[in-house]
Image (cartoon, rainbow, N blue to C red; front, side, top):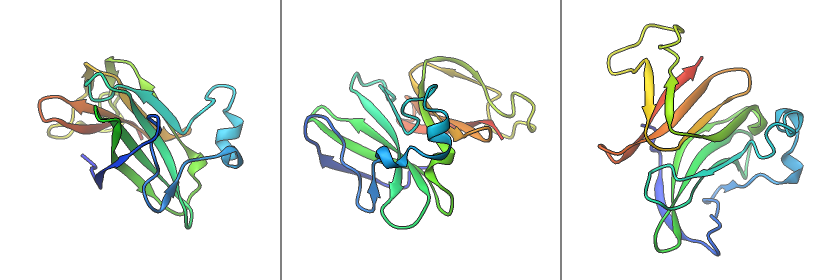
Length: 164
């Protein structure tokens, strides 16, 4: 679990607000892989769904730091009081945000990286995920990828690599 921060904030019309030090991508950010893949992925920096199975809309975003380079993966969990709880899953610096994407995936069966034979599955590392809810696929184009999924029993998100 990569829970780096969690906080709540008010929103206007169910639109999340970027945490301090971060911003949402804009039209000028459609460069590199985001521009090249726009026909296939019109918004490679945003995914929407119900990621924690509470019947509220959630959003996953790749945000850009207001200073420097890099990106972070944030999930905005919808709350019944029309706020979002924001959870940061990932942060990297030194590379452009356009090297990564996020998308919602449906419930179902997904092979993990170790299940595909990239490496031997370690203790507690599943070869296959049986997702009961929508989840988040996050990765670098033509490179490593992971699935972030809700563990209802533990009431938290977990992740598993799907490629290296």
